[in-house]
Length: 339
Image (cartoon, rainbow, N blue to C red; front, side, top):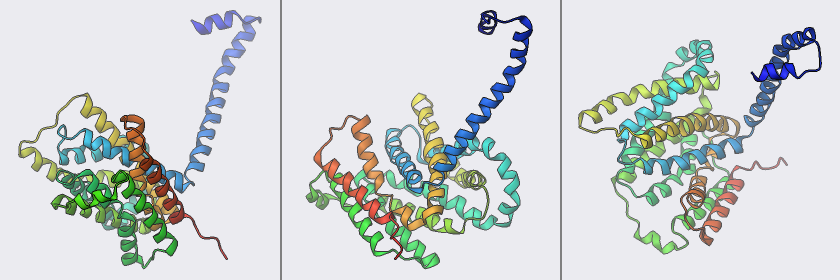
């Protein structure tokens, strides 16, 4: 109807209107090509920005911690791991299918290594983390997570002989102090009341697993990033199925409601697909040691998220802690100038 009115309003003959109608698909296709090229250029630029990619990664992981606490009691731990990776695989597969078929020979040649990536990057990381979060306190988990740069550095040293530079060590220390300021709400004496339990051991174990994955990315086989990710998602999901069935046989149930559905959509898309695409590329660009220096930013993003969306009142310790974490990340990830 709108097209008919538009044509009727044109001050031209019917013959001219027919020519315009025939030309419309061409102009529509040309506009589509321009938009595709524009988005391609933006995506290509973004894919070369490691600091922005890693910031997106740890922002989504920080929100994931809040979401995980929010969904507690609705979805059992193994079920959450199974649905998270399984849904992520199904969502990504149509977009990656062409690349996956092309890279399948490379995947088969490197199947043992790809299996290690699949296990350590998905099930092997989330299962002990979810188990640990049943018993540990949030402050313990966040403090343990801030040791990630050191654990990644240890793995990189054991596997490839890579060492932390003095600059990186200084940046990690500054970020750690900023994390402590935020978690203790400016009162460091609160650290004396912290106690550790078996949940902390499980959570630290998950950190060791993801640190191993991060360091090993240096040996990732040559293939399209979507091929690599979709295979690790699908293959890793298979390893959690026995644990999921064991959990369900024990009487655990998933509460099916809007809260559960929205949570599963978020954890499947953002901390699983978006974050891993960004994280894998960030590590590829600047290496595991410098990328791991971003881990303390999870606490800063979490604090900002709590202020912006959970109604927490901003305090001086928020600003001081976030500023120290930012400074630490800049110091640790900045490449020294060539002499």
